[in-house]
Image 1 (cartoon, rainbow, N blue to C red):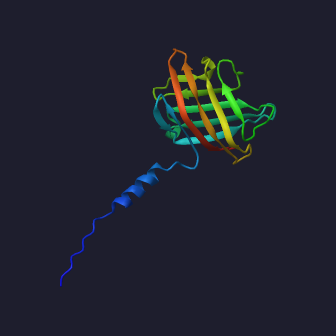
Image 2: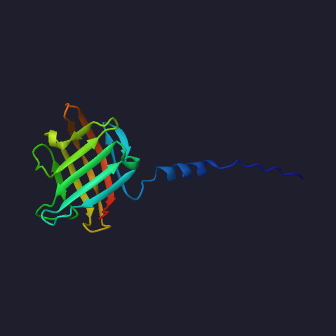
Image 3: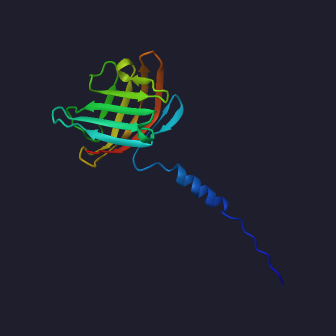
Length: 163
């Protein structure tokens, strides 16, 4: 009796596992859709201000080695402090110290400083210490000086304070 047993290299489930691994979200990230196009920043971090009055918080995201597209969110401490549950609205009506910037892949800067609709940023986790974590969501509209508007949807971040 002769039995032939054949197997192919790498089953379909092995291939699916590899694809799932490639699509996993990194530990620290800034990702969003800009006019419907998904952008996942290769580099993501947060900075605490060096002054204690007012305290500031900056979230940064960019392509590899600081390349475009870039995302930047800056805010100052509110009366409730930097705590989970913090919600910040950034628009032309916000203070100069609360804003979002988006630089597209062509290098065109969009900012909430020029947009009356603006963006909303909400924090679910916020530990304002060195190596602390900031995690939340964001969405809204952001405008360039030339009048072009980018709609940001499905924005998520999980970043680590580097200082």
